[in-house]
Length: 120
Image 1 (cartoon, one colour):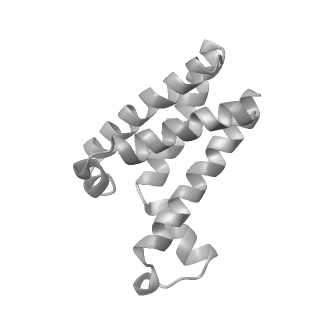
Image 2 (image 1 turned 135 degrees about the horizontal axis):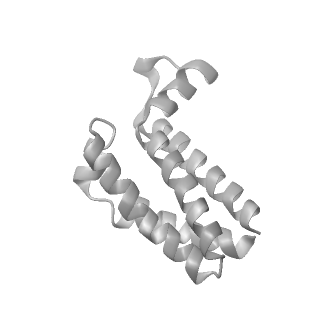
């Protein structure tokens, strides 16, 4: 499980930080095309990581699809804002960028861990 998670984490760091363009980062929560472009490029690395670690092809495809859908939901930002408002009771004017980013990355990492556990 740890090996799968490390491969997924590496793919996450590459896809979410290294290859994501400024255009994708700034526009993905406002427009569908930049969001889809980011999700597709990100998950090429996700699928590659699962392939490299030896996950069965069908399982790798299902895991990649699950992560792609959840990634799109998270990167749309509506879920994070909902979480901060309703669960954490933070007012809109009190939501700093670092908190939004922290919530976003925390959910991404939890989902990667769940997938690693499922594939183990």
